[in-house]
Length: 116
Image (cartoon, rainbow, N blue to C red; front, side, top):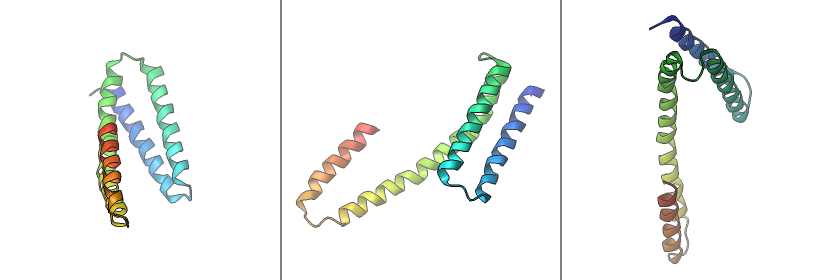
């Protein structure tokens, strides 16, 4: 490991901690997401400006940053799938007419197959 890579990782961790401190503020979720997005874009542009697009330091840094990013996306996927299943199950349980079940099932399965 070289010094620029370690410096990039340290700055990334500091930004993550700064973003984590927003949970103590009375901000809406949309504002927190927007702050995180802006911080990420500014950090990415700064790295791109400092190192250039073909830098090995930048490529190595992105591999380390992806540990957090991929973990976040996988955690979201773990949350979304049970929520979708529960909402589909709830909608089917609230049906009063059994003939609607076939139509809704067809639309739901078709939508899932089309979007995945």
